Image 1 (cartoon, rainbow, N blue to C red):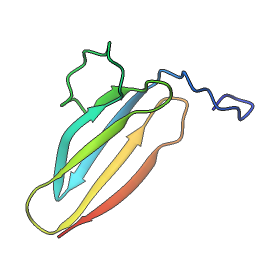
Image 2 (tube, rainbow, N blue to C red):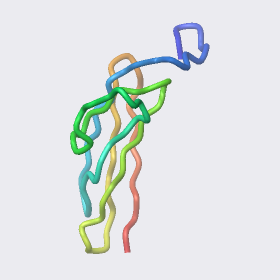
Image 3 (cartoon, rainbow, N blue to C red):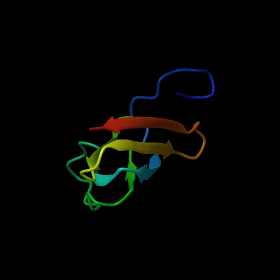
Image 4 (cartoon, rainbow, N blue to C red):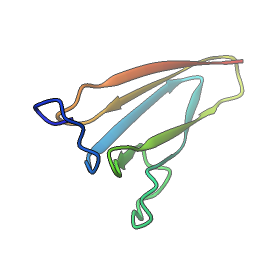
Length: 83
């Protein structure tokens, strides 16, 4: 969103992911066919305002924590429980 709260659908913003707990990073993506960045890096630029991260459980029950940070935006955290 811009400073007036309007959605910016073509935003291209780098997002840094931090993963902890009972898992790790399986990959990141953004659907941009021209993006040649490695899928295994914990950083991904948004494409049309979006990107994704895929988590991999370690095999033991517990929680995987995921934090996403981007300059100029608030950070977000989530915990995913694995069994």
